[in-house]
Image (cartoon, rainbow, N blue to C red; front, side, top):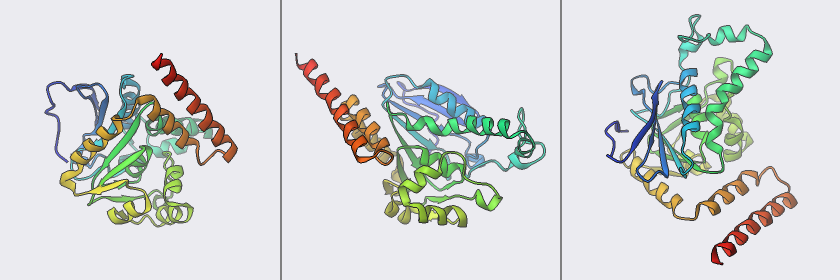
Length: 272
């Protein structure tokens, strides 16, 4: 992926820290969050997660599409292994030190980390991950946090946490199981094998696979298509689909009726 630090004149940088850059386009409707530490394959750390949380908080209300992308040949190689050294990260404890703390403190810390992966599911915008090269562990889970994934044909997803004696804990287990099914999700997580482009598209992990050189253009085309319908209809539809698998039929049918009632009353009011 190219380095896009040279921005169109009407784009605005809202955040740049700890390997994360947030840019608002000139229309104010599309935000791009870029992982910008390609020299280290965009490895992740608590500082990067804090920056992602801040990016979510800084999104202006008019943003309708948030694109997550990464500089360099890899989307994200996962957790920075420095987390498992005795020294840990500057300004924070190592994961080994965290493991020696109380269960309550450890639960609270992991919950904080998860916030970097949860805001992408908000119903007031649609989030799109543009994924190339390696998306491993935390990188895989960050791609799964988004509503849609457009992948380059060199993409390689993998969950490697189990091999380290850990579990995927950054909110990735639910979307993975929903997308590919329990059995395949279990096999992917326990074996740690790579899921490449053809399988990703066939199993629903990828909405679209394109040549790596076309990734940015494909994401731009998708963003334009997502912006075409009225915003309220898009938000209501996303909210309905988010609950479709967890609701009973009667609950979901009632939710559809309520959403359509709001839309029809809104349209009738606008027509007066």
